[in-house]
Image (cartoon, rainbow, N blue to C red; front, side, top):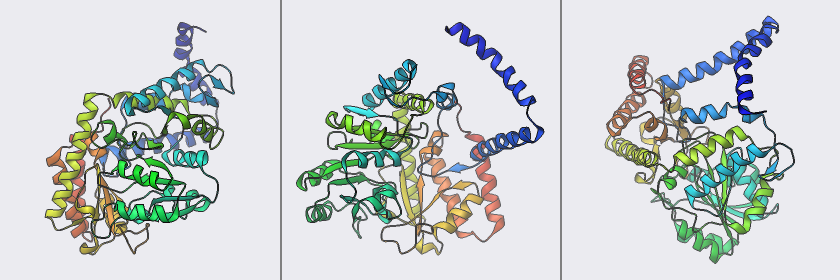
Length: 436
């Protein structure tokens, strides 16, 4: 079938859809309509609120377009040129382009772009190089680590012997000497560096030195800071790590998905660990959208965006400090930071709930050595990737902190929350989620 014939069929596809829907029972039509309306409601919610969730962003229209394309219907297991299904020439090219653009972006030997998420990417690395019961080291959850870095409720904490490390109690930053002593004492097979709630620059060279001294492999999780690394605003782990995992939907501003980077010597093991090790067919609509995200991240416009992300985060952290709040690690070098609310007499969960009512979405968070559970938390985690995508600048970010402060200090006053909500809606109208 040539492209002109394909175009002809696409012209009549809408009519066929209408015919199919008319043939359905009224109840089915109603239920389909309900699901469509829920999706519209969520889009409306996003447009009328501001997300300060560090793991959220707004993907450009071209990414959304590819996510809804028919390429997602294709089933294909394996890697380009080595599939278990036929007629994979086009998806082979799609995946190959995404791999190439990912390798160009980060300057690495090998890239696997099939993982459905960052968590699955991490588990795939474990599958590639570990046996059940092997020892791993990862950042404690309360110190800013991720569930897949060895949390007891996660597969990583159940399959392997976990030696957690934490941040220094005073600086709330990595104490590399203490981490090294732990590594030499326990001889882990794998050390996991990276975090989901750590605001300072990570010294990957020091982690690599620790791994070398303890004869361990090094996995760096850049799920949160991938966009900053791509823009060269954070040191790259590529020269130092054996494996690197990441996501494309946070600072990279792409679709929900994961990727794995590694040295050439581990390429085959990683590919096999992904498929058939942890998943079957890849999602090629997602991979196509990821490819666009990797390509856009190489532009000057993207680099300027990341500069603004950091400016906004640092301006917000400074304003919180001026208002009497304590910031974990005393500030940020990245897109996120943690606000300690203990002195404000409110928990992270309470603050997040009240702020949501006012149109501001944040994440409840533990602080280092927190005595509260992760479901409550003594703080909130704030990220600036999504608001920067909407065009908010430094002054807008400072104003947003003042509004958050108003809610926190008047959380039992409905009128105050209503007033803030109205201001947020005005800001959202001025800064809609961009289409392009």
